[in-house]
Amino acid sequence: MPHPLTSSFRVETLRSGEQFRAAAALYTRVFGYDRPEFSLNPNLLSALARNGGSAVGVFTSQDDLIGFAYGFIGRDANGDEFHYSQAAVVDAAHQGEGVGRLIKEHQRRVALGWGHRTMRWTFDPILARNAHFNFTSLGAEGIGFVPDYYDRPGTDRVVVEWALDRETDPYEDLRRVAPPLLGPTDWGRVTRGTVAAADGTVRRAAWLAVPSTRPGSPVDPAGRTDVAALRARLRDSLTMFVTERSVLVACTRINATTAAYLAVERLGGEQAR
Image (cartoon, rainbow, N blue to C red; front, side, top):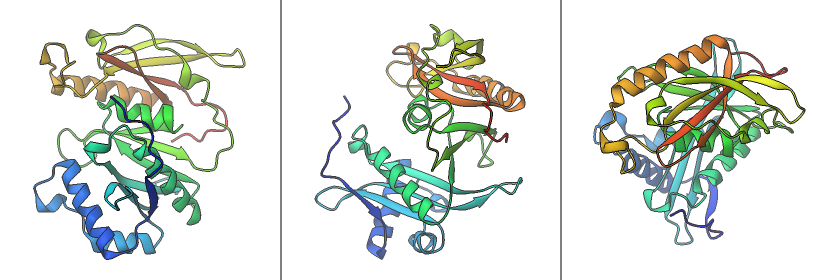
């Protein structure tokens, strides 16, 4: 059961060697890494924090680090610059307490302080909870998709872009649209339709069904999801969205088994990627 937001947490930019070491340890523990090449160097975090990047943490009242994110300045092939958030982690004991939101909002302030106007990061498209946070909670968009982002199987990633100083969200009303009734047999497949915006205009839309929780969890039907096959279907569908220049604007839970992404045509004024 989610815990209520806790006001005793504090969020700050990491500055000391002790904090950077604690962040590296939290990162390794949360991701379950046991190979040295996947570890995080505290010296790197210090250098990033001093030179246009971010290293932010959330602490309990007992000064325990329970959340952490880091990033750096990036530039894509089009010459667009942004703050790239490489990772954000939350201690498992504090999931659902609003720690992730505290992290991203502080990282946003740090990025704006460096003069960045957008932030990007990636996430695994099979994780509906992360998608809901990115799109529905933060108000970011899925602007791209990269197969095998880390050059190894199982690392397909959706590219997220968050406008840090946008005064109005052009997709705000669309993020609240209820998806159609979809189930496990629809996972990874696209359902076409339309959605009505607040101004009455009707826009083409597509729903992409995914598991509402990580495959293999207790609500996974019979616990027999073929994850490799599901990832292949998701790859095909997300690649199609990129080809169509659609953006992902929401991921909504339908029931205990299924959630659905909403992909819509890019609205006027939004730069194509």
